[in-house]
Image (cartoon, rainbow, N blue to C red):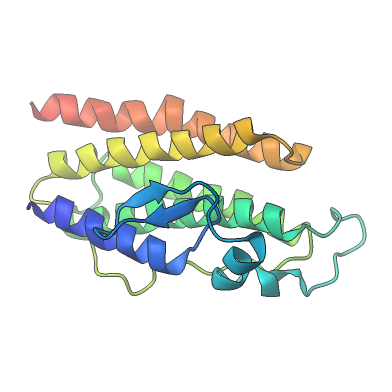
Length: 200
């Protein structure tokens, strides 16, 4: 098993243990797997710390308080953006300020800020990253790191496609999710694909 594969199992295991998002389950290998129903909204919210996020009172002019189902969706998005920022920081730590990771890492910080504001507008506490303290990723080469970036961005696009297609999201959430999806699809993904292509 490669370092990248081993790290991916560790990451997915951490996500399965830490996020407990409503539509996800895990198999015995720590892989994400769709489940027919998943845990109840109340169980998933409690497991991911979402239940406590409704305690604040919205400021004047803010959006109405979010229900647990919306907070779960926002939490899934935020944790995915946290994950990308964490993973790309590991690459920068290992290889220095290399392209395209420098600019994409900065973009991920902006993505985190954009989703965090969706919580704040509803008077909800912004969840902390579940990736703090997780062992760093290890890549033998920059090309391996870029290949992992391709996978991460493909999964990010697929997540936003799924969340947007499910419908029922407030307009501001749809707007933010659409912009983040498009950034991954039209900017980040091609940059990582180009990096892999150049390494061949």
